[in-house]
Image (cartoon, rainbow, N blue to C red; front, side, top):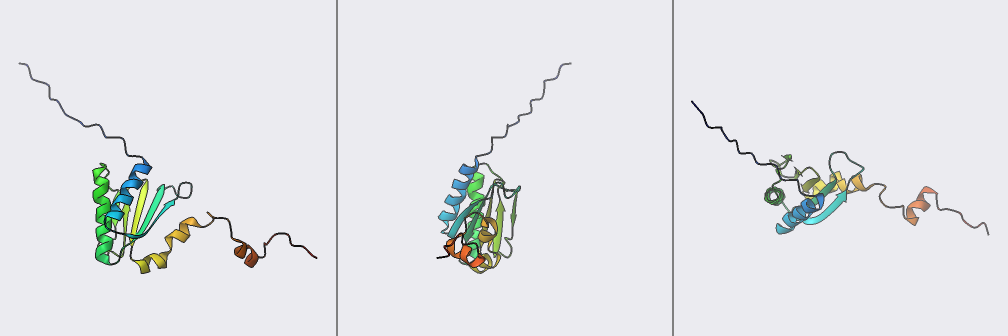
Length: 144
């Protein structure tokens, strides 16, 4: 008695898209639903969790949720399944974790309160002359 071998079809996973391709997709998604004040922050070397954060604002909880849903929809077109989506219920701040890119969609008041842009960009720019003067590090000054 002979039996035929069972063939199990497997699909090799596609290599994940580059961070740049993922960023382009995220930007396309947030632009599609007219998110406001979109900011991209490079956190490589500052965070072991992700390489980039994209922060955007929505005008209402419904808008915030819709923007986050659009990001998930666009990511799935790249064959990317989000690692997690948090905050959809309240929709004041929805986080979409896409691995190399984490997207924060927030109401303006929530965004202002948590100030993620300031948190993740501290020390990125050299101090301005005004800041140096306030701290007493204005550099050499003439005595005459």
